Length: 381
Image (cartoon, helix red, strand yellow):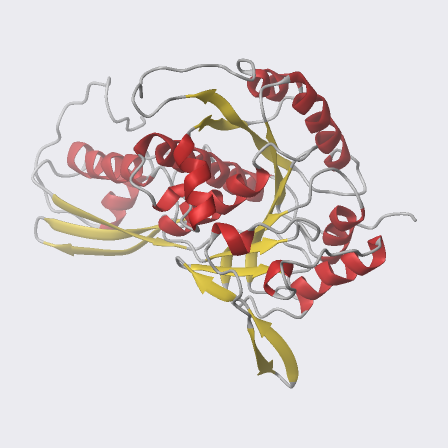
């Protein structure tokens, strides 16, 4: 027997004394929606306390940003009332132990549980906007999040977060000088734009850019993070390979727009991560600028760049489709003002990013539960 939120019929049991064994037996009918196993088998139930008709326990989620929290809570309450004691007063508490599958976590960034690379096959598809708002949505869900701007030649973080002109400080950690990321809106931020004058062009050959990325990893004190979101440069090149060779990336998010030229370049990004030696799974694909919705007509959708091209591409490559982000003026305005749309009152786009982040969390959790641990890439030069 399984417990569902609705659409099922149950006969209430008679009221009798509750025990931890009976509570666990009832909760063994509650399925974790993504992992496909019950929460008792997954060892997610802790600290059961019973006082007459009152029972409380803690469910350990795979991430603080779990989008299924309310569903799990309702299913747990139903399980106890329907299968143990119809008069029970059930309190479900939540905590989180962000899952990770990193085989060499002790080498680099040992306290960062998941590293998510946000990539695009070409520029101009809104990759940095997606990365910034993904990081904010994860943080809003209760996770500890960092955002690394690895787009060396076109850094966006200083403008998008309103920290232009600010400089990170240094601190000594175990005898080594480390760069302390800036903190804004609850995120830890690092970008080459925080280290050089924005009026000066970064004219570096590949090895210098790759060296900067290594420093962002090894010489920046990121501390404890549930997620480190990395805004990668567009295309496929040295910086991508350097990151994969330096840290075990949990997975990549591919950003595209619906138009054919963007989809063609997105395929190159998918192909890059599909190489066996990279060992980086694609978490999924998100379609940005999916449709235009004017503020005065919030229920209207105008498909300026084509319709559902990203969704078709995800189906073609059998990838999770993580959602559609509309083209709304407030996204551009928020980025220019240093207040990303996730922090605004504009509900349509904020909800789209929240739904997108929820899908990323689910894909990461499923990846960590079902796939072997992430390793750094070992490429043949």
